[in-house]
Image: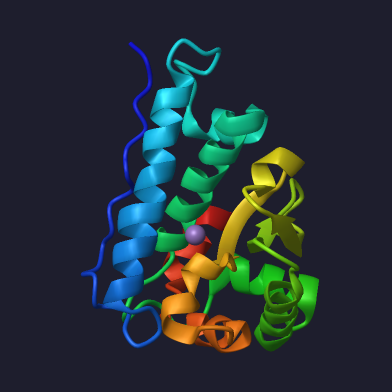
Amino acid sequence: MSTTITMPMLHYSVEALEPVISKETIGFHYGKHLQTYVNNLNNLILNSEFTDATLEEMAAKGQGGIGNNAGQVLNHSLYFEQFAPNGKAEPTGALADAIVKSFGSLDELKTKMNTAAATLFGSGWAWLCADAEGQLCIQQMANADNPLRHGLKPLLTFDVWEHAYYLDYQNRRPDYIAALWNIIDWDVVEARFL
Ligand code: MN
């Protein structure tokens, strides 16, 4: 039984994240860009060594087109799943403790994440990750790179490919980044940390 990669479900309506992310951007970004990565990946894994692999295995070990498309499917799944129009506004529990230990405060985490996302040159992703000891770090990763390729657990991600923000913010990438904090559901981020 070979693997079929499917689209992640959106657990909010297409206009629910407005004005941070418009219905039009969801339509293109989720509906067109992500769908294309899913379709490409399903075609590429046919008769490949990854035909029975999980998405995570493809994203961690794949080379060339399989690595790029699997990375983009994984990254976008994490991205769209972490948002909610009225999600938990701040982390609590073990994640909140780890944030204080690693960054000093949530505000300092946000400052470091904003800088990483704003200064990433070209296309890519800014990440909040955890290592095997539960230490947190902020990372910039180009193109379709993802934390699984570096032995890190992905917790939170900001897509800074222009297709993620250009319809709503044009060249104002820092405004898009600042606004994303308003739609993060920290319940989702906490569940990834545990
Ligand atoms: Mn994207």
